[in-house]
Length: 496
Image 1 (spheres, one colour):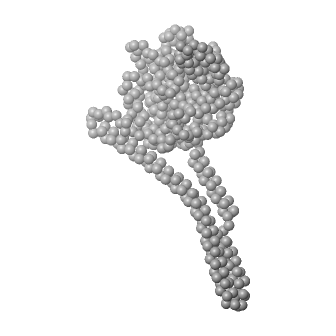
Image 2: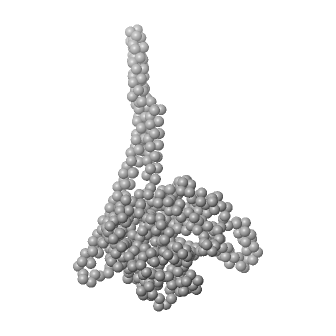
Image 3: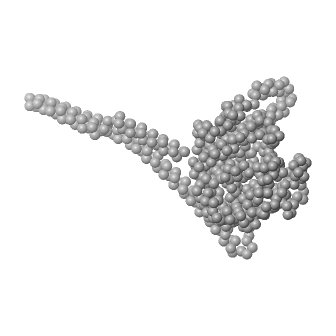
């Protein structure tokens, strides 16, 4: 979009230049007319030259002075016009050169980053081949992940992901039925707010202007606080906390989003550390409202099911030999503060309010944004089981076939319970540690792994490939591997 805008601006400049040319007089035409005038003057003065020598000398001098003046005027006019055209052409030339240099630097940096990361990977592979007991080197600080947006400062941008203006976002909310759905729930004055505080991770919020906290009440509270000077600071702090909670409670849509490239060897390093780590509680970004973060506490001595491959998946993953251009959904919250929970719609873990009913519309919008920006995929790391469940209904797959196999195996064994009791009890069973591996009794603790919605053809081909689908089949657990221990928590015992 930015590139298109710049092209349009260049076209506008070119059109303006053409208009100027039409209004200006051709310098060659001016010179020609001047010569004709000069010749005419010579003819009118020549008849008088036969009268006296004085007249002849006078006329000759007059003609000479006139010709010099006309020539001087002609030269000055021509130079001015040439300078004006030169300025127009030099302006276009500078703009063209700027875009050429910009593309060159962009390609240069990207090529350098790819070559550097390739060399680091080659060194890592050589070390593994040379040593029987490979030393464990951490190359994390040497790896470089740079997307095209890293070449620019986004802090001054007023566009989401440096591409979409507020007017475009408003039109997309209309096009994908988001405003219509909000209106059906009584939110007729939605307000879109984009936060560019983080230059890379942009935040998009939607509130309703008529459902915001009552400013008059806040003013009254402030006046009451002024009556007691000793407690003024404490009361102000309490008001700030209340205002923060009120603001969070009146957010309808909250999205943290960014663009990022990542390489498969980064995923493999992450996978390696995951398999060796005893603490696998990888949490969401620090800028996410902590009320929504899983609060999963295990009892001492609790043994966990291990999310590991039955058959190695590294060779499958290495088939992706290109940097994956992803649009990352760092956080997504859709809630309706005005709608209370009910027996038929109980809260899911982490929910402060019931859902907003725009999951499909928001996903369609995000797919559109990623498609128009030529991204390979949408990327997220579901914080809970029900998040992954919703995403998989929208054609999201785990990039690691081993993880996809475990997720599908869990789904196969608890699908009947979902149909019988609904999604909420199953989600709370994960939260309370009541999902078990039957053979060992180990608790299945939900883990965060990369789940993708393929956009580009090459990414779709990866998930459709026989290598990926076969690896998923090879890592599937038999039916009956997992079960829900409904008696494992008092809140769930009535589902037995």
